[in-house]
Length: 264
Image (cartoon, rainbow, N blue to C red; front, side):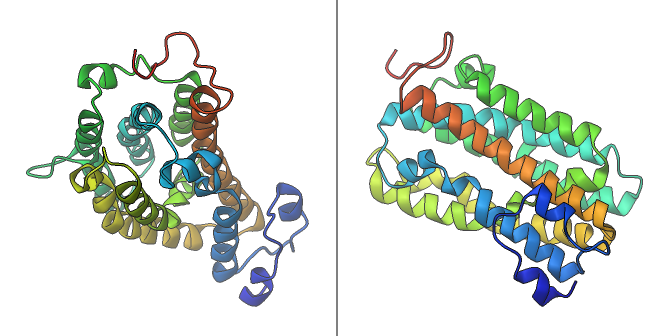
């Protein structure tokens, strides 16, 4: 299949369509185009909760709930990266990938992304010990994030790396979030957006390495199907977290026992 032919495949990329693809699979450009179609169809910027968040339609307590739950995902990223690194037999690859770990846990004078996220939750008025205990997060958050860490620990390295390719779509989302939240909420200031501003530079660097790796190593149709399905899995992980937030804190507003209650 040529790159041009790959670019004409319908946006609704499903396992059935992949199974019907030519047996020789995509060329590298066609595979990249297929991965981008997954993002266009499934990335969580399309979720109603994000539209409310970026459009200034949430109350402070709902923004607190989002930041609290998202902390569990942020804090689990180093676990995910270490799980992937444990499968890397090539030293140069480990050295390259470990920067992702440092980006979140920090190293030297760089406090790391987790600390920057905690400064966001601090500024939103959440108790740091409560946030880091994760006792107030939703069951959907815990199950989705734990499933992602398990995926990267148990699946082949190629699929684990492919699951990280949601970073292809993250910079645009971060830009929208910074602009929308600063314009919409009087309790948000620029310092609170430090995590997202840093990711504007980090995400493109990360995704270039991962995308090139996937394009080089996913050569057969089954391998390409597996990496596309890995990316679909990751978009589902992100979407499921927002489903939980929407159901608990927006409509119909059913907060499960033990979860964070705004104003409580």
